[in-house]
Length: 118
Image 1 (cartoon, rainbow, N blue to C red):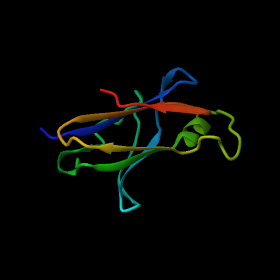
Image 2 (image 1 turned 45 degrees about the vertical axis):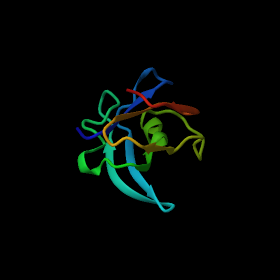
Image 3 (image 1 turned 180 degrees about the vertical axis):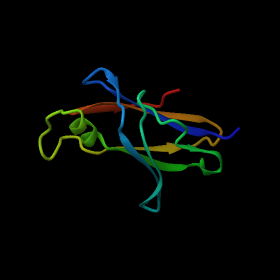
Image 4 (image 1 turned 90 degrees about the vertical axis):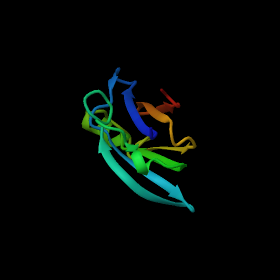
């Protein structure tokens, strides 16, 4: 079985899933970023299918970029301009092509955290 990549966004400021957050996945090679996929989180803060799977799921360095500022503005949150966190970028490595990598994001207008989930 091939490995796959998923994500989940939780809005810790409002205690709810991060619904409607635009995100992009990039593969990092030789210092440049190649766009792989763009998606939007559903009402549970997840993407409906794996972000990366099958033959596209290969070892390497990747970045998930989340449009956090746009999300909070759409919720009516008053942000400074420029926003403290506008785009959240998480760079991570995929080393095991048979594994499930889950990269969750816990976000507020002024902080975020991530970890390798299950």
